Length: 145
Image 1: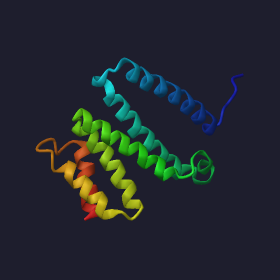
Image 2: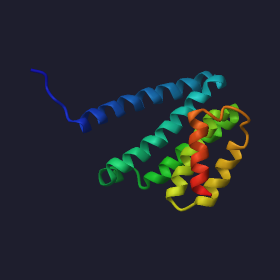
Image 3: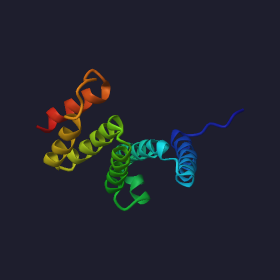
Image 4: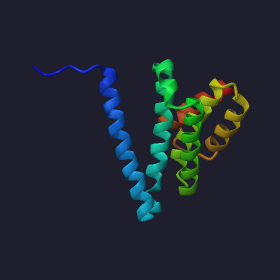
C-alpha cells in the first residue's frame, strides 16, 4: 500500500526541488552571460517574494525560523525582480513585481510610497487595460488612493 504524506511534507519536498532548479537556472544564466534570458531570474525573484508572503499567511509561527524578517526577504526579492525587469525593459514583469511590492507596502502602512511607485509604472501603459495584471494594478491604485 502506498505511503501517504501530509500536505506540509509534500510542500517542503516540492520547495526544496524548486530551489535546486532555481539555483541551477540562475547559475547557468550568470555563467553563460545570456542577458536575453535574465528575465527568468526576475520572474524567479518575483515568485520567491510571493512565496514568502503566502507562507507568512499560512505558517506565521513556523516560518519565522527561516529568516529573521520574512517581509524584508520578500521585499528584497521584489526589488531584485524590479531591477532586472527594468534592465531588460520588461514592463509587464516590472508591473507584476511593483504590484506585489505595493501590496506588501500597503500592509506595512507605506501607502504613499506604494501608490507613487505603482502609479509610475501603470502610467507607462497605453493599451492592454483589459489584462489581468493591469486590472489588478488599477484596483490596487484605487485602494491606495
